[in-house]
Image 1 (cartoon, one colour):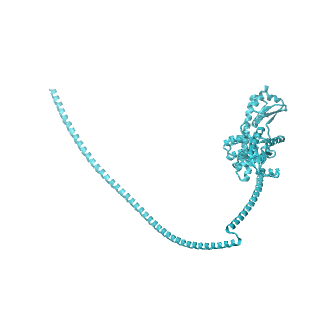
Image 2: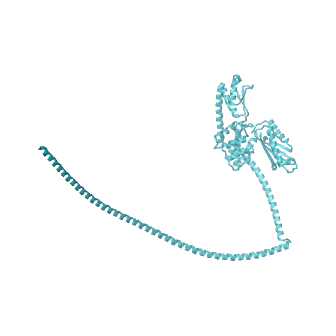
Image 3: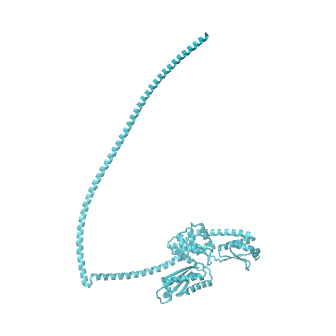
Length: 534
């Protein structure tokens, strides 16, 4: 019974729950429909609002574009108006110019007519003048007995001869005046340049002596079995002579730099009273540094004294080494400074580049700074050095031309050559025994005179030039040219002489009353030259 009631109650509950669920579902559906209607209404209102706003924006944009278009049209109308105004002004200007051109053409036509009338009058007057001239010519021909062509020719001959005579005399007078004036001015310039120059020289030789405290030091210098003297000679490259000369040791070398290093090292060893191979090497190295420093100072002082700048450091070293170089006892650095001063003074007198002239004069003998075992003359070496360090072309040419191995490319090269000869040839500049000088000059002249066809030979410029005068009837120009080369070769083969010797062969066909007259006019000769470095 109870179970039935419970089952009935359960069934009834289920039925009632299903009914309640349906009622709830219907209420939800109804609420959804109500909400959907509200959403649709809201969407319609929003759509109308958006449409209205879009219409307003479209109208505003249309208004803006319309206003902008109106402004552009107004601006274009203004531009068109300005262009039309400019066109009107130009047309007015063109009409005015056209009127002026028309008036000018009328005036030109009037002038043309006047010119034609004047030309006709001139032609008529010319005809009258020609008739008068013709009458006068016929009358002159009747009076003189000459026709027109003969008279013109005779007059031309007279005038030409007169002009030639006057021109020849004027040319002679000018040549004599220029010759006298150039000689005077040349001497004046050289005198002024030399007066401004004064240089002292230090005479040197291939030997250097060092004083010893006593003769006992000679044994220390030689060392046991000659150990010390051999070490010294090997370190310095000089020959040490220990002889009977009291309290003196002599060192000999053709390289003056090595001689100076040896002298300083020997004096230091004697001062320290300590001579052995290790000490010798140490003092020689120290002396080498001192000499290198002296070379640098000598170059710096020289360049500062001459006010020469922008010199390559290695070229400075070559310049400083000239302090220890000599030629015939003449110090090369002092000689180079003198040539630099003389070249600069001469350039100043002539209005040339003074600094370039000094530079060329200073480096003209730079090839002598190279060691004695270098191949080639000092000119060849000097050209190589100055070219390597990119010196001025005039400087290089001055090095090459100061012994006439090339033609000068600048007046400065000629001045350097002149200054070099002045410095080397002045009294006291170079040291040489009179006997040796006389022997060398005599030998040079004898060698040249040994050739057939030679009339006379003169050794000039301290033996640096041999001037040979030949008999013109025995030798032709070509044979004279060959003769100069033969003489140069013979000198080279039979003599030892530093530097270069110039051989000049002179052949002249003119006839003179005496040999003196012939020699006094040798500056007009046809010369054949040869050079030799011996």
